[in-house]
Length: 423
Image (cartoon, rainbow, N blue to C red; front, side, top):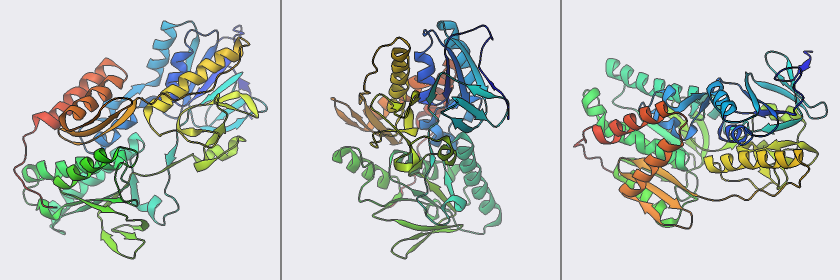
C-alpha cells in the first residue's frame, strides 16, 4: 500500500484540509478557507470544474465544452494568491476513505493524510432500477455525457438524411424537472429552426420531442402559475407532454410505459433522479436516502467530526436540500466556517439554507423565475434574468464572454423559423 503523504512542504505544520470534489460545494469550501491557517488540497477526478446548469446547452450544440469548464489548478492558484492558505490540486479518483486513519486513497499516486476532510463529490444519475435505462438512455450529468448526447443526435440526423431509412426521429426526454424542461424546450426550438435550413430533406413534423413525467405536472417545485406557463410554452413549441407517464423499461429503440404502451424513440434522454456514487459505500460513513452521507445540522459526520460534507452528496438528518447550485455553494462555505471554528476552539453552528429562488428556461424569450420573497417572473423578463444569473455565475471572464456570445447567437442572432408546429 502506498504511504500516506500530506500536501505542501515537510516543514509546514499547519493542519491539512483535503477537499474532495471541484464542483460548486468543493470550490466554495476552498474559497472560504483561503485566509485560514491551513494547507488545502483539492482533489477531483477531472482537471477542471464543470458548470453543470449549462450542460444541456453543450448537449444541444449551443456551447462548446470549454465554455463551461474551468481549470481546477487555475482556480486553486488564484485562491492561494488571494489568501494565506497553501493550496494545491491533486487529480485522481477517490477509491477509499479510512476515517479512522484519516487517509484518502486515490487511483493514482500516494495516499493523502488529512486533519480535516470536506466531501463535496456530488452525485450521479439514478435510474431507479428501470430495466434498460443504464444501457440505453443518455444522461446529461457530466461533460462527457453531454457530448455523447450531441454526437448521437447529430449523427443520427446525418444518418437518416443520407439513407432515408426513416422519415424522422423521436427524442424522448424522461423527467419534467428543470433539466428535462430545458432540454425538451431547446430540442423543440432546434427542430423548428435548424431542420428546415440544415436538413431540408427531413420533415420536421416527423421529428418528435416527447417529454415524459410520472407526476401530473412539470417543474413540480415551482408555483402553479409558473408550472402552467412552462407547460403551455412547451406545447406551443411542439413538445408532446405525457404527464402521469411512468417508465417501465427503456429499449434501444423505444420506451415502455407502466401502462403497457410503447413510445418509439431513436434517442432517450434521462433527466431525472440522482444518487451517490457506488464507491461511497466503501467509505465507512453513514448513508441515507439515495446513498448520500448523513450529517448533523453543522454538516459534520457525527461519528467523525473531522469530516464535513457539502453539496448534493450530503443529507442533513436524512432531509435533503434542493439539488441546485446555491445549496451546494452555501453548504461548502458553511462547512469551511465550521471547520475554522473547530480549529479555533469555538462551537460549530447549524447550517441554515438561504433560498434565493430558482429558475428555468424553456427557450427564446421564455423562462420562469421564482425569486425568494420576491416576484414570480415569466416570459422575457425571466429569460433575461436567467441569462444574467448563469453568465455571472461562471468562473473566468473568458467563459463569461464566450457563453454570452454563444447564447446571444442562439436566442437572438438566429432567424425565427416560420414553421408552425401543432400540438
